[in-house]
Image 1 (cartoon, helix red, strand yellow):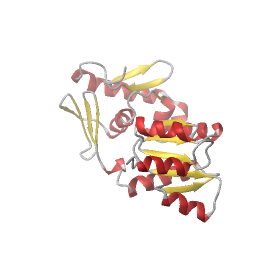
Image 2 (cartoon, rainbow, N blue to C red):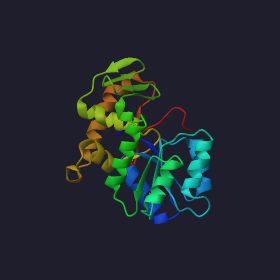
Image 3 (cartoon, rainbow, N blue to C red):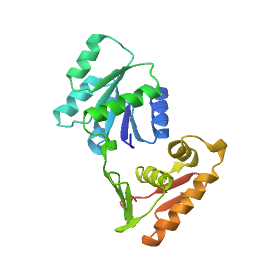
Length: 231
């Protein structure tokens, strides 16, 4: 599953923060909201790919939030989060326009599996193939091809996965630990130098074709690709 923009809505800070941190570590861009009104505003303004929505909120219930945005014609997929496991509640959630329902306590693996299933069902699974464009960089996921300012660049499989991960998260600094976990799927016993080496390989291939460096180093933090639209 490619990187998604996920809105996490929960009035309990510990659950909200834990979900946000875990989803970010899994490579997703995460926004948060502590209540229903804030959730509606962020859904309208930021257009997330999916919403993880707590049913019991202090102002408007998750069901109420769903009814309101569906009434506005917004079809963003919604995964309800709730402490209640009543069949009646599940039916109510799906009836108002929810896509799935998970009961607390839940594991991150379960959340990720449900998100993946929802995105496939709604036809919005980015793994189906797409173009990633960030400035002069273009990645054709269907053809597994990379180009800079129209010129094709030959990359090794690992270079491709690293670049794709960075480009799927524009304007977000990714730590070396996150990159190791996502690209190599293990931590090389903490040998962060492998990331530095592959970033160097990419720069040697990409930078001669671009008007400015594509991969930016944030010292002491990690790496990012900045969208030209970002301030």
